[in-house]
Image (cartoon, helix red, strand yellow):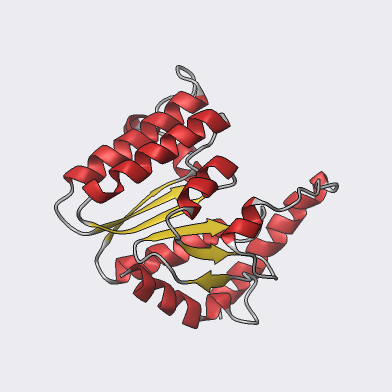
Length: 210
């Protein structure tokens, strides 16, 4: 199912030569996909595109992301916790454990998308969370797609051992291993990042209206 979904995404207009999102897909694990790329590369937009494809097939798509943390209301606090009362690391851990528990109990097919599950976590905690998710992966019998977006070396290294399907969002394709082990070049134009993001979303909106 995961490969089928991504092949449709790959053949569509969103990863084409004229798209504001430049992406490369390498198919490996049939049920696990890791998404990498620098900031403002289109990872959140990729989530929305994948979400649409699962929804087209009437398959529940659960995404846990920064956008969800920014919402208000009882559901937000039940899933993500409250930043005022608990540390960000505690809330990230709670989110992961809640998702795993829910996934194990689900009786119908679903996809699970973690967008930076390690937010606010030390690398030690991120490593522990990743080990728990990997250990419990096979217990989620109706899971038809696990997607991970991460900037954490600990998260990516552990998923790399499973030979995941890999989406890399950047002009030149980098393998997961080369992305993990890349030399870090500091971003100098911090102010320009916001302008770059606005241009990216403007280009995406223009393409969506075509």
